Image 1 (cartoon, one colour):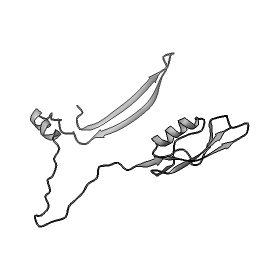
Image 2 (tube, one colour):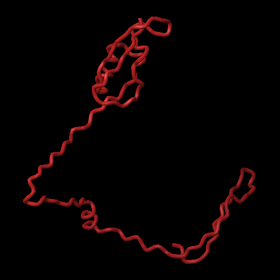
Image 3 (tube, one colour):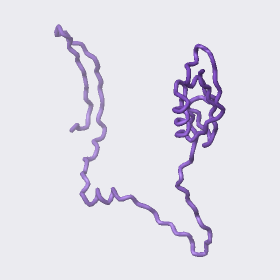
Image 4 (cartoon, helix red, strand yellow):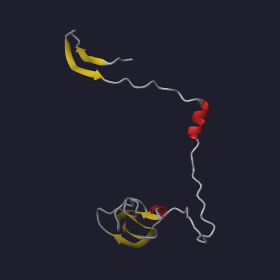
Length: 139
């Protein structure tokens, strides 16, 4: 434990040859000693772990009903489809809460036969559930 007063803190590093060099040299003052830490009793720890939930009851004259929905909001997060087969792309689109849109074919050296070479929306785009994603397949 530190008492009130001024203290000097120095760090000295020594290399392989034994030469010492000062790395840090600081002075600090202790102006107040913190209070000692008191461990809680088991009963106090159990009381602190129990959450406090306020109970609010509506007035008896109130006829308003409150309906709370716990259903999660559905979003369509466009998956990466490039390089997948059409069947695998359809599965990925369905799992992302989206629908398959227009399916077109493309010829060329860059497009591999039977695989998705382009998609209508950028991967990672967040849209409302049920949005259609267009797909281009290599021929």
